[in-house]
Length: 130
Image (cartoon, rainbow, N blue to C red; front, side, top):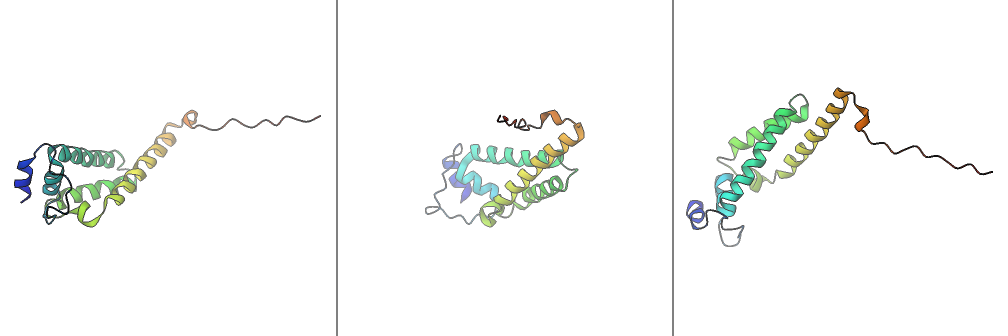
């Protein structure tokens, strides 16, 4: 079982080893513990916490609400299912992450009214030929 394999190597896990170990585990958290150990679960948990924090910070935009909703749903759903390893949804999370960051930067520039941060190339001056 995943718990027995975790006990064999609790810090770094057993590695991916898909050909050696069954990946039929009903919890994403248990799968991460088996494969990547405590280091992996801390890194994964930190990323989930970051996504929720980003969603809360950008909750005024539809991208922030989508990221927050999806992250909260995944945290609960991962108790009994493999959201990322089973359904390959990480690309959706990355796209929501990028959209939140970009919409947050755009909103900050607009609300601050500070156009001095926007880098524009200097105008080209043509040398006149005489």
